[in-house]
Length: 269
Image (cartoon, rainbow, N blue to C red; front, side, top):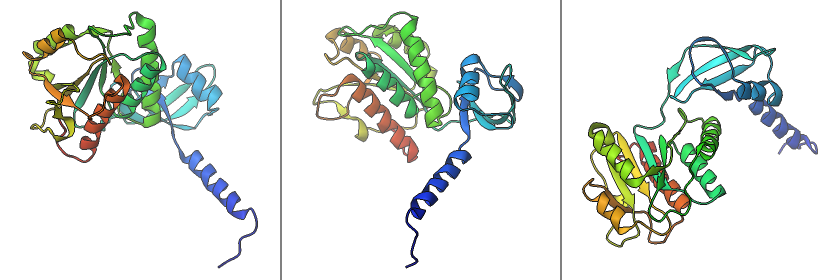
């Protein structure tokens, strides 16, 4: 064994970590990605110039809400941050679009749910107003906060695009919108704790491009809502034999679909 001077191993590890950090290309969100020179908005410009302290010539990876991505290089930092964008391509990490329509949990639990759904590749989140909902986040402030969380999560997770956040929607309104566009609706199911519900991991259908999963409040679905599901042919599904919090159920359901996608197997529902 070759002797190593005291502290040398730590220095080598630090040097390797520093090299890795330098090699990481920072990811920046833009509103609309196109080839050529673009100007970053105020928030992204502040992050690039004042927080990351990147200078002219630094490489960036840029992405937008629609899933477009491109490499670019900073060409100016004052007075505005401008970036020269190369070839733009479209990236998707999933073979299907997944919508999670869920009752909203309280406080920071909702923020956590939004972040994790985004990380897992959820295409669209619909906050549901159910008969037994405790939280009804009306107004634009909460939705704008969730959009910011989804954008930051997309940046960190390097997913394609940014998860869409719908306004607060009633259950019957969601079902009516699916019925109005049957070709795009795809498969759908609602989570239940009933013993007769089909385990989500054991139910398989032929491939569908779009999937919608409804997650109810911790008080459960009302009889009226369950009656609404039947004519729309929503499948009654369960995750576990235990009772889950809203945010746990939503994230776990999305994780099941994401895992099947990642292994190139037909997902449930």
